[in-house]
Image: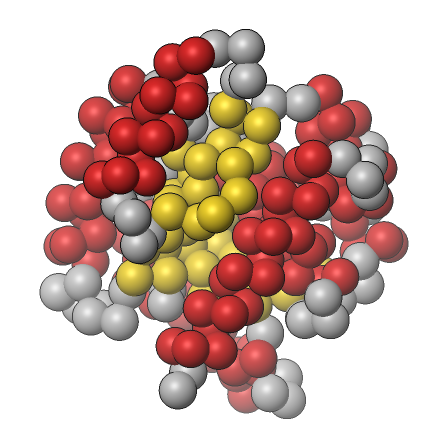
Length: 221
């Protein structure tokens, strides 16, 4: 299953989601390939420097739009049961050629969405991009993940409720709350599942991983 983690807005938790969702999937026994499509910033590569030491089922690579089809084709030929591997594509914070390549090949576009008005307004633009991508990739489906929610801000809860009402079948159940545990994991270049195994963030990403595995099982039928 190929998941493009995408949002044209920066700072919404795309790389954090890619890293911690991958760890949760690996913890559940799945093989995970993480591809950093942001060849300029390479945040994913920095944040996963120690990930495979704690989650051996995870492998992270830097990949461009041009090399993405080649890399996936090579993996399909060389990896037994590659279709059982979760491939997470960490897209740059622009609707670039890398993002277009990711959407062309993905089964699912996973959109980390911060519960604030600018992010909600930008979702309309992203919807148009996804609709255009479906012209060449009709299997593409979208799911939203609420990230960076601030429990001290009443507007966050109101906007999250609005998002869940507007997209009742597309928003994953867990909410990722702001927490210093994510900063610690970034400093240690691994996942919160290792650095803070009992934190709310760990529980939320485990829940998201289970939901995506259930979606995968139903999608394969």
